[in-house]
Image 1 (cartoon, helix red, strand yellow):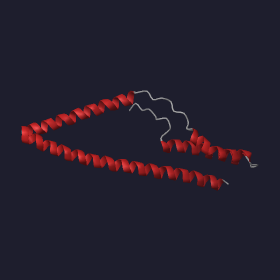
Image 2: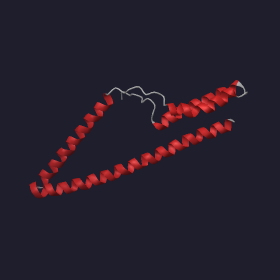
Image 3: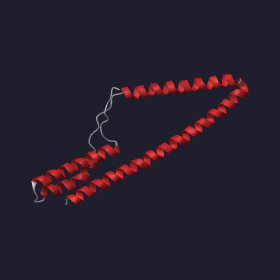
Image 4: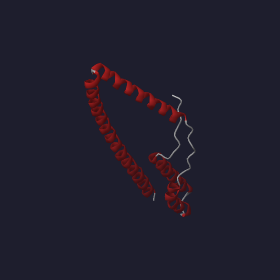
Length: 143
């Protein structure tokens, strides 16, 4: 019975990790493509500005625009960092998914050690789903 719990938890964790890796890999590819497109757009803008105002003025215009974008991004990051986060409840789906397993462990005629181990496994499943789905509380750091 404990082997079934362990394989269930392992399959839940590996499925969540695999899905998250796929999602973040696609985000990284999209970010890289966006950066390449932005680089080409800046090169084209520099060419147009250089033909109209000269190469030094074109470089200064682009540097100023990038500095302004950096200041806006920094201000947005500071605003989001200092904003108070609302408390998040434990997702009901994780509790409902673990309920049949917990009921089976509590109603079976086995020792209290196995029931305690099963309870720890159920708690681990719930916490694992929260961690890998990103639904847990974020730690605030002052660094």
